[in-house]
Length: 448
Image (cartoon, rainbow, N blue to C red; front, side, top):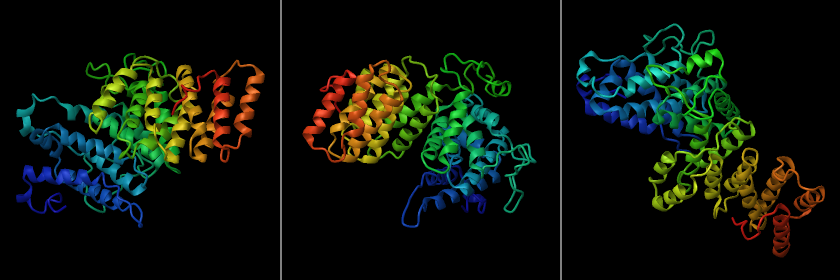
């Protein structure tokens, strides 16, 4: 903090600046919780404040760090700042928004760094793209550096973003997902997913992603402005000859959800949120236009290369996930559910299985068999959840549409009248076998 505030110019060497920046960026990931609550939020807030002071004290900081240490540390700063703008706590979101505005409108190129002009202008390109979606604060066009106690950036009467208002902040920052850089897109999307899984703010984050998805083409390979309003088309229009600048796709959202589901389930804190948000987006119809084409699994393979069992899982993905996007998502859910006994996550997997029956006939049949297998699960609560989701898939979502009335009545009878919480093992096996026959599945193939 002392170095960031410029208290000792002699101490502001390039290496010291890098050390301070790395420490502050690490602090943005502190989500420690104890009996006092989210104590990590105190660290995150202080890191955001200090980074803002650091950037305001030196308007050429980003350019200099990119020149001296490469683009990675600057892209990390931008990515984690974007994720912090999705925080659930208003005061943290406001601090993150203030830092983001400082990075976008309070930094400038350093003429003394002309020697590195031949390097790819990644940082400059990303800053330019982010400025399309994040306007300058009210009353300023970029020169708004100020000390403590200065005018507030959060003015609802101006054109800036009121970061303390979750509905407004999430709706505006979600459009930054169009930035053509994965190192920025992924942390922002992950932040929206984590926030979207909790109430009361979750509905704002999910709605923001859903509304943003409505403006996207189905695939990135065939962008179209047909579904966009004139203003939205102008926002996402390519610049400088880059046909995909600022473009994402509904397919990209499905792929990103699949990537999050394939993170290490022993340590990941994003799998449950990804299950919840994927289910909500499907139910809202936000992902209905996703294409059934083969997907690029490079991003998923990269994730699997970072933890134990990488070669086995990666080989399985390469062999089996070259199907349609929905089957890829289905298999990611199944991989999470395999051998799982934790009722909360398993319940989320069963719920997402049910929702998949709304978007893909082939995935629906596979999901039906997976849910059917849990009718004999040793945990009574899981058996009941499986029966409930089977009822939703068959009787509400219409997976077996066109079946005769007698068969449908028998299915409803089994699902609603069986005592799934207390039935003995023999009765459970009999009900599972009869259900498999009624839905046209091999009971031996309906394996967990």
